[in-house]
Length: 139
Image 1 (cartoon, rainbow, N blue to C red):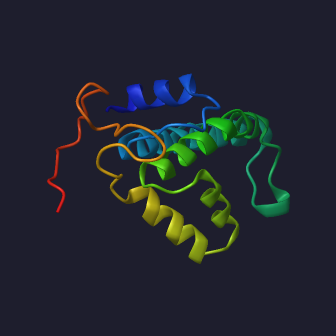
Image 2: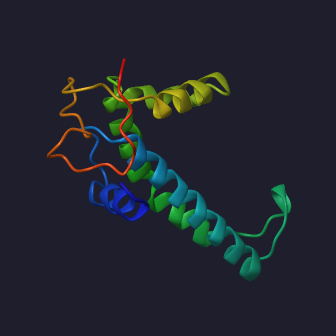
Image 3: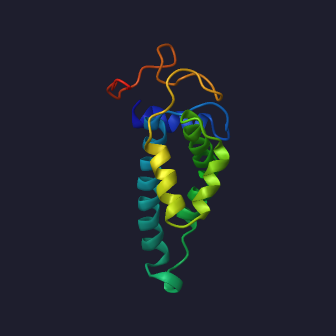
């Protein structure tokens, strides 16, 4: 899966919290959001002023974009957790500083369950779409 396909898939499944998402889908969408937010922050800074903390100017473009991708980001995160056999409610562990963040990033980077699990079919199986990621044998 390439970045274009991943972003298209995440926006097509805008608020779909069911099913499973590949690692590539999740991480390409995260990278896309990081890049777009960085560009919008620069544009906001040019038009509304740069600053730090309370002295920063308004950032309407990056704020609106972040609000617009909140649901698809949560949805792809839940689907990614489903791929590892966990409930999407585990996203709430993000509220625990540092430990929750590390654990969630670890789960997002973990290989998904082979075959069907309680959340759907394996997204890497034939017929669901070919992955651009090299296939590493599971042990």
